[in-house]
Image 1 (cartoon, helix red, strand yellow):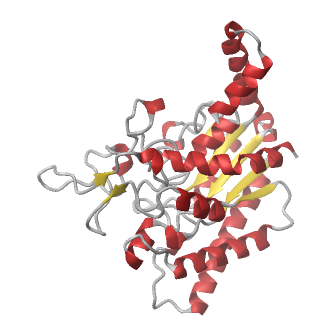
Image 2 (tube, one colour):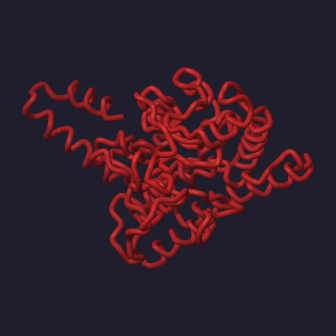
Length: 342
């Protein structure tokens, strides 16, 4: 995204001395054009969960090796579940911002909102929230409504607003097993997609002008599912069938709603992961029940990190690397810009 901005500025400005000034003005102008509101799961969360005194599966985003590729934050962990920036950061850059808007947990309800707010938290979804103090998609949107009701988000900001909604990490389907019947699964997918559509309609009622909705990526190719199959060598067909069924139903239910665009994560993940590292995560564990960043009682790492995270698509068992997210958003950028311009 940054390269595109620099190229545009270079073509418009002839002297190196004015390049910095004009790029800055261009970025400032676009920042005023859009406000970004983010809802959903770890694909888009920018650190809403508080940092705890000790690392755990829930708080691991605040500890090494998370953030280790993030030069914009001093290669330090920021609560994002990646080695660096995530999807919401790259969308924000498309809109002229430096990174995701501030996370909800750092703002007061009546705080001044400049570029938007990120309400997303890991382990969130439609049916089940995060592991501690569940915060579902509906509850996140209710928090947003409070900001609007209190005047922290004004009408002008809503007129130029973009919402990114991600219920894509598969947490709503984490309990699905071989014993789940087809009828039960179909009913559950119907409920989850209903919840996403309800969220989109509620955002539009509040006044959001454009809504981007993530589709489900190929869940069967995520490391935690592919590992259960044949050690990352083969995707889990049932997981991918679940994702395609979810996506087909979601698109059908959203069809006809104006100013809504579905982001095709399924095909982007599928092709980019194959061209990078497949389903093998950069931060891997020998124990399937362990997590990236975990230490034993003696402080020894229970994980390994690959030598070149920039060559890997997946960072941990579920989430892409910074390089993976940048590649995904580069792939989707033209469609997003066309949608926003319409």
